[in-house]
Image 1 (spheres, rainbow, N blue to C red):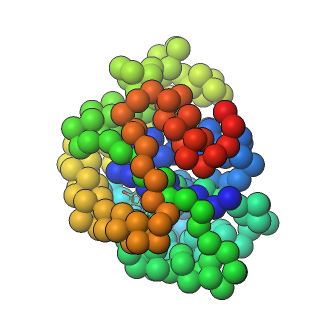
Image 2: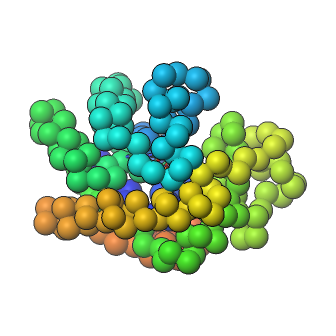
Length: 217
Ligand code: AMP
């Protein structure tokens, strides 16, 4: 199974991808996570990407397409993958299509997780995540059991991402509307787009996605 999770930043793509990755035995490929790892490791690519990311802008297509191309050759992708945060432009979607064509395979479903802008602003400004295992929290709706400690791996010190600040959140939403939303039409034309409501609890969103991809819950 090859899936794309589509939606604005903070829609819950990463949260749902992490849940389904194990359940479906397919690997989550998050370009945002790959770029943040490159920044942590201090690579040249990470240094180039950081300025764009902190400003809430999209990193140039060539960089992210290169990352995905390399990663998709991994053995762990043979069983399928779940793309989280890629593609984000029509150029990226076309590059992905070419890559898959050359491997004689294709995307099965593009799942659009729908959430309105106002809710996104609230979610992202109160979002915290674990620097070790990536578990995601919301200070009001899904706080960790012990303040500032990850429930899943007990790491102390949850992160407020550099791009989860008001100016970057607005820029990311604009990038989504201007550069990423045209993909709706791109995938609709190919008969691949399925919409689910992201304004429900994570369990309900997950059930809707399961239904869409027809796996048992
Ligand atoms: P995410 O974790 O998916 O919200 O991504 C965080 C940031 O990484 C985005 O705001 C972009 O700056 C960058 N990024 C991640 N994926 C892509 C992509 N497919 N194309 C361009 N930039 C990306």
